[in-house]
Length: 430
Ligand code: SF4
Ligand code: SF4
Image (cartoon, rainbow, N blue to C red; front, side, top):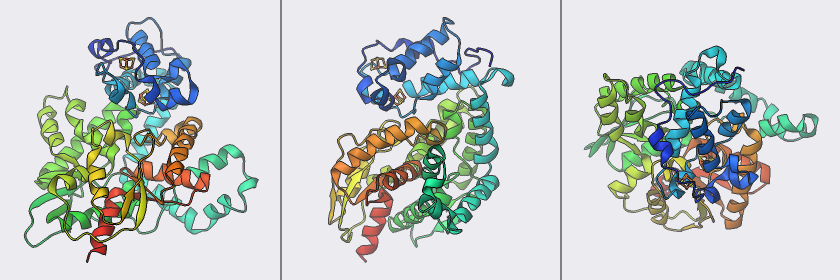
């Protein structure tokens, strides 16, 4: 690869970079710094590299790109930073400005990654076909055999990769149109279906619709909606992310709803930032800002409307894994705790660092399996210390990653989205 630098309008802003005062307060919150102890795997080290690229003092060699690539984009450093450095957007901009180089000069792995995200993940039919293969793989018994008796017959690296794959469930959630229609609705909301959530965690969508119905909301799912583009933004493919944002804005505007409800924190964080994503598009910028102001995480929405009365008992010990893009990206921490604490019989046991990343981070667990595994192992140790029987999540990616951690560590625990436990309490109360 030819050494490259930042190109185009997404180049990180000098003002953003100048905010860093190099104090190092962010280091203890960074999972990759904790795993390696290396300055260049810390927020401060990566900001130093990005500043040097920005001023042209260095070029984006494979070594430099490797350090940027190891970042989970979990944004824990943003929460820890006393100087309000907008690390998340600096890293997204840096990746986009590197991907703005001519295709032949782009890092090969990044080019492939962007191709798969654009041509498979963002294409509903292709994504469903791929996941149908995953479903057949599970149903055939091959997945269970590879995880059981054939375990030792395959190389360790492949075994680790396979262990991170989800067991694709039967009965995907693919409903569109009107999903709930109470007699006298208090609000009309739309549900984001997402690119994989309806296929991999369909029960979360079912529970979301039932809870919103119980709260008196009419729920619709416009069929024209698509992938939110979060993965594309994180991978530096800003153009595909912008195209997906425009499509979703048009689809949800046409539905004329009071709020767009998202039950995957990563998607919600990205959709709340559509205004910035389309900041240079005069035709869409204002629409994007207006759209973003109506996006709500389902837990934020439910907690703000007040929980339904008559909740039944749910006898579980629960630990909550804060999703990075809910706690750090959207600054929402109380809503899931308010919901869990309101459920009779449920005991919430906090982890030492509930907002520390699980290593899922979009496609990170696939493209950086080694570091993702190290971050997951640290997270599972914290979870085990709570001795909880249920691990609550707020994002489909975290659910899949922690399920893989449960399998790997042999821990006997169930992984459920917070909204599923509220749904369970509502049904227990009937
Ligand atoms: S986003 Fe997460 S992994 Fe990346 S530097 Fe910040 S804390 Fe570390
Ligand atoms: S990013 Fe913030 S916390 Fe980290 S070194 Fe810079 S100023 Fe300090």
